[in-house]
Length: 314
Image 1 (cartoon, helix red, strand yellow):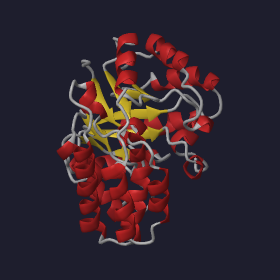
Image 2 (cartoon, rainbow, N blue to C red):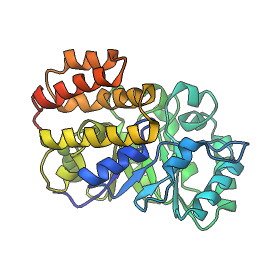
Image 3 (cartoon, rainbow, N blue to C red):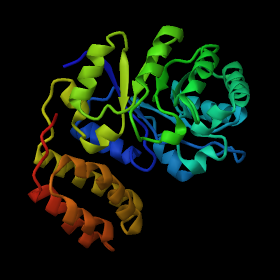
Image 4 (cartoon, rainbow, N blue to C red):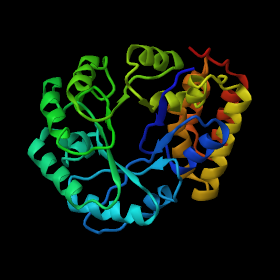
């Protein structure tokens, strides 16, 4: 058991309000959940899928993706009116469709534009705190020191650092040396994110970095929904709990999306990660990906949940 704050990372299409509800009910352990990114634009209104994400959950932080200070401020004011007191600025998304628009980690390649955007945000902000989730650069780790100095100019609540550059996506090893330099140079609060996939990963990090007060995990939590509970000294997920979690999430999606391909798409994405909690999933996982309707999907999913051996937690 470790004494540290634990954050559930935002993952587009995965950590939806319905996933958060099911996870909170059946596993918990997160001090904060972060929404998949909301994208304020010139229309100055949220889409329905974004409105679904901001229903006032007290343990949830909305995340904004934009390269415009005025769009960020509009959204921040709207969120303040809805009761939120923290918002997160997405400067870490590595997706090519996002970065091509100078958004997410793409904005890191344009430090003057980033500086101007942050200046507008902190000058015009309502009584709302801003955390930032960032990569260490767009192309090369050498970009990090200048970015770190830029961040140090602003009263950022927490700087959440994934120590990879955008073009690395999730490949290779993280650049822990970049995080080490941040600990020495950055005047504010740092949160670590990146390759914390198991309870032992988090425990080892906490022993190596006792001065860090919070960590964030995404892919590890999607693979093992009991990850944060285990870090807090609780048990690993049982087969029955994983089945209950799956069934609860499926029911929530069915209720909101009405079934059909939209639900199939959501559940297929879930299994890209949840299958990592089981062994011998190749055949039923292939059937999940090929399923053309919900009965075919449920038959394949239940085969995993009832028959495939659980992997041992590490």
